[in-house]
Length: 323
Image (tube, rainbow, N blue to C red; front, side):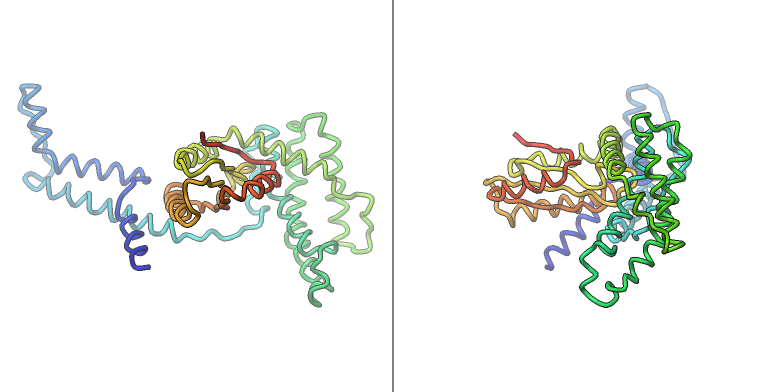
């Protein structure tokens, strides 16, 4: 444990200069600290007598001070980046309406809203298995509260997104999106008036399929996702990783995703514990680089069938193979 702590402290102290301000200030500090050397070379090659000074003979002390301050700042920032906890915020509070320029952007704004609703419905709704667990579930008190406080505003956000961006919706999908508006209006009426029967306006599953597929196709061209995939690819291009996938919200809504999920398949050249140590370092570096958590599912080579099943259960993914 002590060795691990010392190792983490050393990692914090070794600057990787992810912060541009740190790079600039350190460069200036090094320039002042090494002034006698580069000034002598400059004068020698130009046959001139250049002289540069900020505070005279104390320039080197100023340079050293700048380096110490910037590295201290860098270390503190890295520490807080590692400790940072991101609070869960309802999807409707993160919806953006004024930057939508195409159908892909529209679907990516809608996607987290329908996933929020889906999660609540599956875990607290009347068709969930939670009604048999305790009296609270039997009365569906939590379901009624969440549908009012979360699903209702989520639905209103979806409806607004569709209505304000109808010109972006392809003609082949217009009927499905109109069905979604009818479902929202009927469901919202049911929340306000429980006696209203909305069974004729069920959630159009095709709507979720279109939104998910379009979000994924749009995300694959996203610079944020490409940058993360490139970084991870470089780090996982090792002899002990035979295959890996990146999946989850990052491959659907990369601009909004709070973390990144990957699954890796090991080969026979490394044991599980050793691989776990190496991948823990990768997660640490990823957190510092992108200020996001990297979640890993690790499969040993003997669990190839389990990895394939896991991959199949996550159809929206980016897959990479080594060798």
